Amino acid sequence: VLSNALQGQVVANFEFPLYTKDNRWVEVILNATPRTDVSGRIVGVLGVGQDITERKLVEKEKTRIAAELLTLIDSVNAPIFGVDVFGHVNEWNNKSAAITGFAREEV
Image (cartoon, rainbow, N blue to C red; front, side):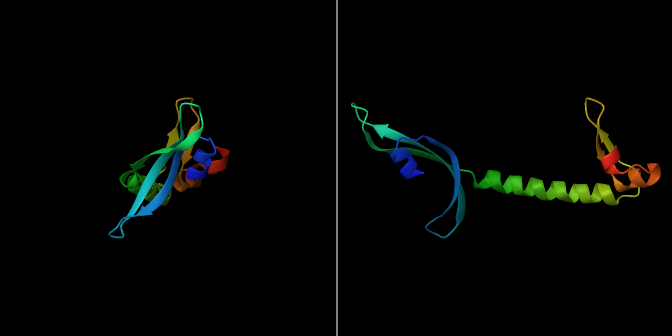
C-alpha cells in the first residue's frame, strides 16, 4: 500500500491485521495518499487508519447467526417461505417443499 502511494496511487479501504505491543490482534482499514511538495514531486505518504476490529467481530457474529437461522428454518416441522416486494419467493424451507412437492429451486 505504501509503495503504491509512493508511486502516485491513492489506496482506499485496504484492510489488514496488526498486532499490538501486548500481542493483541487488531483489524485496521487504511487509506494512503501520496504527499507532494509545491512542485508536485512525491515526498511521502499520508496514511489514515481506523480500527475496525469491533466491526469485523460483529460481521462474523452476524454471519454465524444467519447460518444458524437458515439451519433452523430448514429443520423446523412447519412450512416457512419468504416473498420479496416483487412477489418472488426468496425463501422456501424443507417442510414447504415436502408439503407442496415443489423444490426450493422450482419456486
